Amino acid sequence: MIFLEKYLNKIKKVFLFYLYSLRIKILEFLSNKSILLLDHKSKIKLLVTNQEEFNRIHSCLKEPGTVNWIEKKFKPNEVFYDIGACTGSYSFVAANKFPKKITVYAFEPDVATYTNLCRNIMLNKLTSNIIPLNIALSNKTTFKQFHYRNLESGTAEHKGLETNNLTRQNRNEEMFKQLMPTFKLDYLITKANLKFPNHIKIDVDGHEFNVLLGAKDSLNDNRLRSIQIEIEEGNTQTALITNMLKKSGFIINQKNRHYNTKIFDYVFVRN
Image 1 (tube, rainbow, N blue to C red):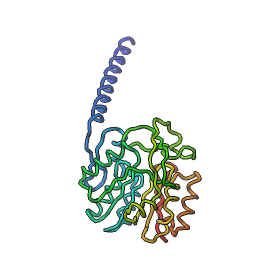
Image 2: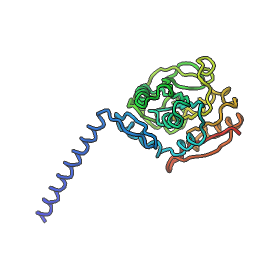
Image 3: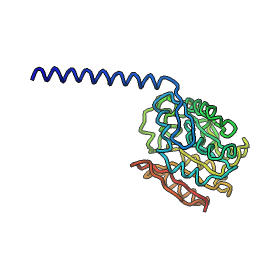
Image 4: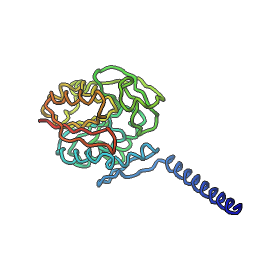
């Protein structure tokens, strides 16, 4: 019995040693700037500097409905607004669908994530197709506090501009806040002369309705053909968003669920 106990302890020590060694190797890997491929048929390169960004290389597996929407609905010479672009996965899927024949505006307010979004654009040689914008969209053109969950590039589910609505990101702790400019989408189109969008993706962790409020004129323009919005069903925004888009002439075309959660990507098309 004593011999067996010693033997098991020895096995335990060996196991813990290899587990620690594996952890060190993973940390060494993450501490270096690695370039990996997005899980898409196109050879899309993504810079990986931490675990959050490593998770992004599986974006197509996570949201196959988004990829299908881009590949089925988009046409050459159209304009795509990727609002909440993060490190750029879906911007790159769109840009690779029609090389040099589509314009993508990638909106990303998170400073660290925006930096690596720009690096990814350069990596994939898409500077003529994808225009990154380090600003937040909202219902007012003003300044607001943006609340960060952490400062790692690629991080999602910040509190962001929302601090008092009951959405999933408000369950996360706050590490840092930054005063940043916010713009109404209609203002940018009319005053900054952005090309008018034919398709819009909105994934801003609970701030989706306010983005739509800042785009009322654009929503009523027939050139806007489809909108995908990430919605956590069960909160007050679901009905507000669907009713607003219905009044602007859109109907629900698809609802793509995120695994076994209450989070869906609603695809609206003009009726």
